Length: 270
Image 1 (spheres, rainbow, N blue to C red):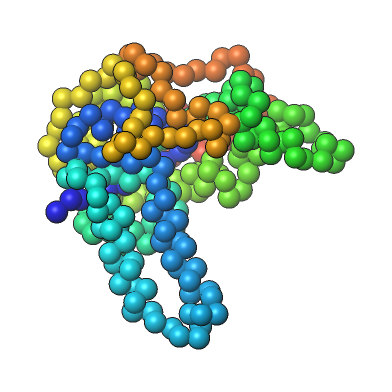
Image 2 (tube, rainbow, N blue to C red):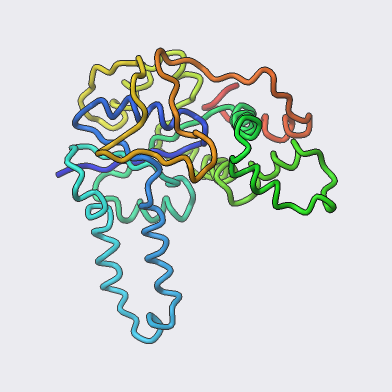
């Protein structure tokens, strides 16, 4: 029977490239950003309907939840599935803690928050159709009192969106025993060591991976469609693995001060 594990963490922190490399192993399948989280959430929302209030068949809904992970990946033939999603938030974590069909384990990717924000800013600068630019263009400019850069950083990090969620999730799970943290900087420096650590954490046989990237991310014939985002957020640089730095992007001092301490805890250092 296949086992299902989970990949989560900060955006722009190596999710796609690590997934792409792991998928070289024919026994393993790391998903793209999956909809499994939303399936559980939307199923729970059924309980807020008039139909459910009129006929509360809780057991039947519970039966769906118990089999949801298995059914979601029923047609995936690999032995080990790694679902990429927002599994670090308190609600999502509690859901999978209850319904994971095997031992619940999360790989959680980390990166310096300043570099994450700079990465988003670079996408704003390079791709006019990037969704952050669209959000900025929809703002009433007569009501703004900050610079364009400051407003876009506010959109990138706004409460409830992916960047903010990932910081919240980290604070919730940073002391959990079933979480394996991977720093982007460590992966760039020694990708083989980091992948071996992932295999050890999942307790599955190691695989001799290549770290010369030749192909874009794809699994079971499914690829990302970044047209919906307005920028190639999941496009990989081919060739040898290298770090993406942004020396030409200067962030406001208050942004640097606000986010420099996000990972200032004992098991992470910058």
